[in-house]
Image (cartoon, rainbow, N blue to C red; front, top):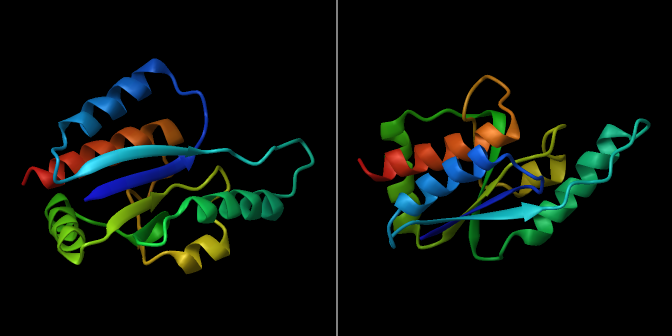
Length: 147
């Protein structure tokens, strides 16, 4: 199974790339984690939030493959324990589809993206910065898969 993580393209500090890659490389051939960076909408001091979310949402939707199960990371989504996530990953594997995880921009995900999602997942009730989301997500997928 391939899990594609679609996230905003941004120059990340070296420690983020190192942390993400460390966990992504630990996954075996049964589960591969791939980062796909999506260009963020151009922002300015006078940018309209809804317009930015819409533009970023369109870019995310365009990057989803037709045969993928889509899971949007959303603060109001389902929270998993590590054991629950392990079972969920087994279910994804048994379902025969690759998985696409969506991380929104600074203003969240558009309504169209949330409608397209097959499920919503909350990593935490806290708002996490994008660099940490990449590492936490990779680590939790690795930890759950090793159970």
